[in-house]
Image (cartoon, rainbow, N blue to C red; front, side, top):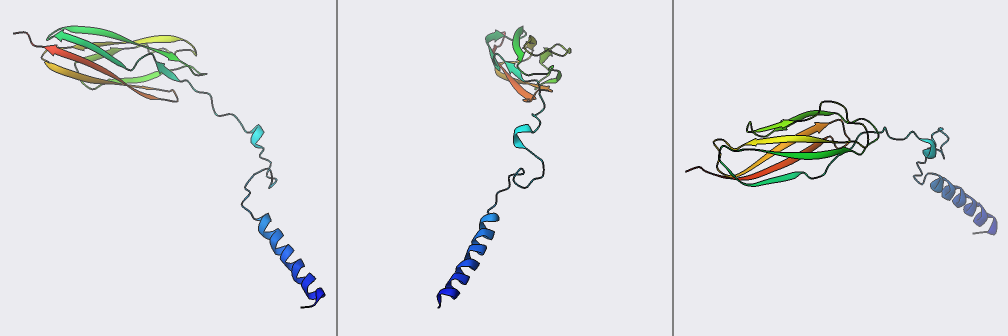
Length: 151
């Protein structure tokens, strides 16, 4: 191969290499000039964040027929008002009361939970599901009690 042929082949190789590097998978939108700059993209929408002080309560040993209360404190750690949309207990023996008003950011509120041990005995575990407009929109609270029968 002559020197002239070698240079021509090297030039073709350089063109092929340039094409391969140019198609290397760089998907940066700014590099392709479509006007999207990652540094100026809109921030994700701000949302409320619900944070409970605890997600479990143990009533310990209680007597059958006894009604017991506990409270679960929660805070809105987000940037927007928090609204609890629904609260569902796993059993009709558990009744929950909560504020239906929006909770401003940084504020604290409580859920009141009553467990009715009528007709129950032994270890009881109940679940209260809280649904809200928070980014962590579903939280499960656990209640536990050891119900002693009246005999």
